[in-house]
Image (cartoon, rainbow, N blue to C red):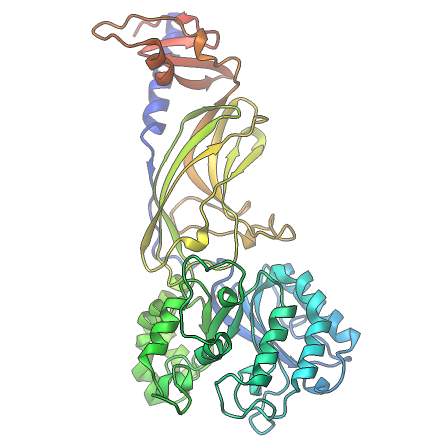
Length: 518
């Protein structure tokens, strides 16, 4: 009996030594891995018709974007056949089938609609027809919001870039009555929890009527201001990225005030796009500026192959992997402290420090769970209050310090702790391809989409752990009170039996002291 108790005692000592002091995590700063809603993209586009309604279906498979760890496709629907008529049912059904194809392969889209993709054909649809098409699309957009990362405003101009347009004042980035109507129609019909990205900051400024940047208090509130994001399809080009940061004839072509506006806005709204630099000499000069520019303007996604003059330079220089690692969010755990024992229905303390080494935060709402995983992979999850959209980028450290309540139905036992950040939509919440992976070594479980926190907690029943069952104990050299002993009591399961240790004395679950002989 003494040998058994001695063995139990040493097991307890080893267990406490391993868990009571918390844990430090090892970062992984080199691996390029897939994560949802960020990274390099490829464009899929087509002029759709009733007989050919698909843009995505038939164009992707399990190898699509695999080498670059892509999770996003830019999906562009050209409605050129329907500038002044209803969208056929087959086109709407084709859209649903395309979105299902994205789910099949664990992807999401940057979604855009346009009426022309040729500068020689600037004829787009009137605001009235844009309204009608958006009203037709509304239920389909809502039904597929889970795989829409963001919508780009689209509809106006060549490629839907609000430029080169026959109906909305050609070559104008400014707001006017017709453009204002399109913005109104977009927000009336797009999913309420999705951002809409606009090609020029002057569009947002003109629509809202001021140059005030989004505040932290209004961010993620669902207001129109909080949902208007940015996309830049002339990244690194001259003349203020081809008018992106220009005042359209009323000021400088590259205005530092507008640059600062985008730098501040994009802490709370997404930014991305592509580089269109096709001049080889210029490409060689500007490609290396990408990390600094992406970090300043918080880029989440970027085209991987257009223009090749720049993207090839990125690949040849090794910058491509650097950008792929840091674009969007990249969270890594620094260290953590966790309660090692807790009663059913009571609170467990967690303190986690993490760093976001990405250029941007995550933007769409996403829950964060502490998952208790027991024998036979039984799982119990508790959502924490921390909002990952507030985990700031470019190396900023966030501390999560919370008391989470363990559900009363969790059976007594020892549980491994995991951090799980699934998609908020139930349609894809159990798909590990849509869960967030942390950039640490030896913590990612690809089968479940969870991050192993490397620690365990003992959950005990409330009745058998009543501290009133602990006997009084006189400890030589101290005058510890009974309440102190209760607070100091530590619990652990060994071979299915519960033991309590207090002031060096071990007790069984009923509070009976056990003697050891070391």
